[in-house]
Structure formats: structure tokens, C-alpha cells
Amino acid sequence: QVQLVESGGGLVQAGGSLRLSCAASGLTFRTYIMGWFRQAPGKEREFVASIERSGGTTYYTDSVKGRFTISRDNAKNTVLLQMNSLKPEDTAVYYCAAKAPWVSHYNSWGQGTQVTVSS
Image (cartoon, rainbow, N blue to C red; front, side):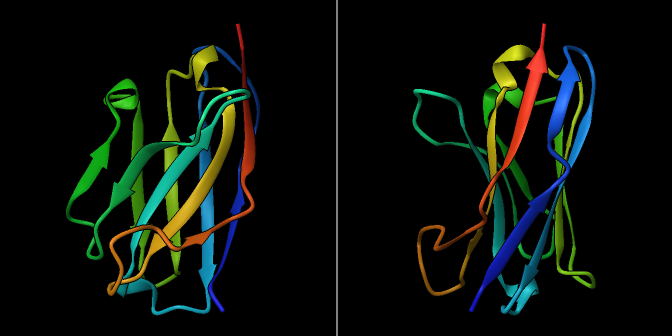
């Protein structure tokens, strides 16, 4: 079955950077749209960024535009989220997600990695 494993979370000061990585297995990676979501304490899970199958098109939520960059390596079955100029409001558990070609929603999720930004 599909397995997504995130890494790279941690504690960082405001203004700092982190790079999240998601290693995917059990799927034909190049055919899946990949995304990152986050969930802060007491809030619903929200979309952060996504990347199309070839990596040519990306989408971001407004609050991270210009600070976060999503990328993928189809040869390594990996998707990355480079996060710069981090703010305390970016504190959340970050989840990697995969959308199969035949569905309209993300149907595979990782366990999440904690990102904490101190002020």
C-alpha cells in the first residue's frame, strides 16, 4: 500500500528555515499529485502547497507564498517543502499527502512532522 514518511520538522526561531521531506513508496510516484497540509492546535487541517505530476505547476496558500517552495524528485520518489522566513503562526503538524490519478481528493497521508517556530 501507499506509504508516506515525513521528516525534517523541528524547533526553529522566527525568521529561520526548515526543509521538510516526504519519502513515498507503494505507488507510481510520477503519476500522483503531491501536497503538503498542516494542522495547528485547535484548528482544522489546511492546505499549504501542492505540485503537479511533472513538477511544472505548483500551488500555495496565500499565507506562505514567497516563503515556501514545494518541489519533487520523481526519480527518488520524494517531495520537499522548503520553508523560509518562518513565523510563529507556521507552527503546526505538517502532513504529506498524495492524490491518485483516478480520484479528486488526497487519498493517502503521512503521519506528520511537528514544526514549531518560536518568537
